[in-house]
Length: 161
Image (cartoon, rainbow, N blue to C red; front, side, top):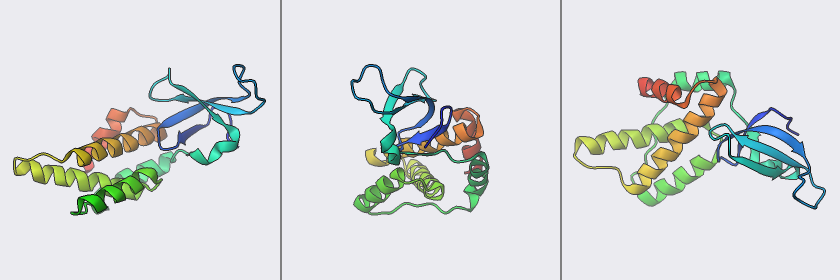
């Protein structure tokens, strides 16, 4: 069971701080809930039953974030030329907790974006959407683990690519 003040990831939706654990006054059921406050938007509060912990997971550690950022140059990119297969693969990666696959995906889409730009073309809509999602996933989680701004994480990533 998580504790008050733990910082967790909720269902790949973002990073939250547990602000409280207990029953909710506005519900008649005697059921225990986690009160989660988004680290991105302090006004965003959600309530998760404590018996539904499967959607909660630990934030990566500071050491893991430092390690994965340093490994960016050594990690291969991932970009499947078949759009349907690529979308399925990226959807699976976005649901995963695998930092290496996140970075492979980021490098793959950014590499394709650079390639297309050099030919006067843009990324397709789905790739652009997936790029925004993976950039956000990495910047939000790594910034929380490192206790720095998302912009700083993005700058570190840009330097490594």
